[in-house]
Length: 498
Image (cartoon, rainbow, N blue to C red):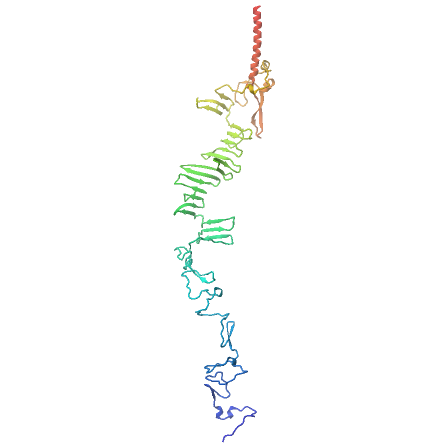
């Protein structure tokens, strides 16, 4: 008969080998057989009825096919953390943050994801416009429209159909502003880049340039070229300007050209024959009209010069002197005709020549009515005239302190008529007087007159004789002679009568 064993007070472990076969038989819990002395980590198909789990931690336990509810409070770590939000088992959460969704599909959202949250701000199935450029609307939602489109190669502003061949097609007024120097800067592509630049800098304004000096800036109206700016100048009516401003009407007639040379400013007019009005760059030339009058003049103290056949013929210098055939305003040098203004009080007319004989004339008065020279002065100082009379004013109403002449026969008898030769060769065997000798008798007939100027420009004076003023003394001498003759006649008559 089997012996009843009591292990209640066993003091040492009983090896399994010392037990009979009944103890070697495994115990089956659920669908797992457990041998005495062994450990299992997973038990399945177990129903726990009226079980109490307390003060215990269940770790690494898998519970499947639970036949009845397993209370949360029987477990530790009974919540799930999603992102930065802990959600207890059996609970719900409406907001979860700090979550990254990979390869996720979101549908039927209660509210749209805003652009600030990385969404579109659109709800439902709101469509985008074909080729429309996405932008943030006034509600901060993403939107598109036909006013701004991109088809992959062309950007259209104000149009959904950019013109073929244009990378940018703007169909409305365009304004580009900047806080830097450029307000608008349009630059082409390629090696010969053209640019249009408008500056915020008041000292520059705007610049329009072409790629190289060989490329002109051309202006069209009505499909035809009207004006062209090249590296040479601006051409109006011509595509090949030859000066800074070249205006042409027809092939040759009516052409006007400004600034044909680098050293002179010229207004060049071509009308079959070339004509121009010009001046030096430093002086410039001006034509202006004021209250109906036409003014032609210069600035910067320069002369107004007239040329023919590319040779200077006359000028008005900065002092107002009119010089013909000369640039010198001296009255003793520089061959030419001169109307001089040494002072506003006494203008001077001067004729300067190198001739010295009667063969050359300095002053001429010719009458076409009679076909004769009325008056001329030759370079030997001789006055030639058709009349020997010089009418001098002698009206009594213009005179006062009238008295008889005190000079007469005595002074005439003291004069010494002479013959002489001029040292400069003007004439020989000349009949006349010596001024110094006349001065001893009739000093009022002798005056100092300008004869020449020395190398330093100092005036050289010589004595001149006023030959016409000797007539009153000669008349008085004749009267005195006549009185003597009459006295002698009376004496003769008396003698004959006796």
